[in-house]
Image (tube, rainbow, N blue to C red):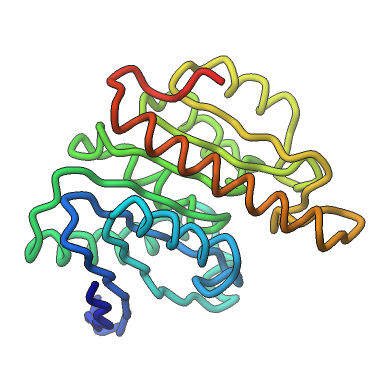
Length: 225
């Protein structure tokens, strides 16, 4: 396994990414949240789950200040999508991957849902969305119009957990939702409970692993469970 730290320049802005190579024909691109970075539990163990399945992994280390985060969603989307597309293109110039997985959390689900899902070459890619920002109507509507094989994980104490929207998404056969009772936007249990939060983390990783394995052997989308 090789771990390469790389730097690229996008419109004179420096953006770093980490490319973990196992020699796999499959790569998972990961997109962090605003303050939820790759060393935190959901990403650390998601990375381990990908490596366990012998996938290559790319962590994109974008960083946006509060001035950008306060922009309208359409402007935030353009900025992040431009950055991640540049790096994805750079990775594919040097590697011939046969399959692609995209995994994002919170802010990191924006470029997946409002960008990558709308590109034809990604039609067969698997999408893993941890705590997507369903309060935004454009995010919700893009999910409803998507035909991608998708796994969503969200806690029912997350401010972005909106029952009406969850129910509509659940009607789509290509999207499966793992709803976590009493979990917040970090998928930690409220009121704070360490052992239960660790159990949730374990269950989320098992669900991701099941999603990856099932979709590797099925042309019909997600597991129906």
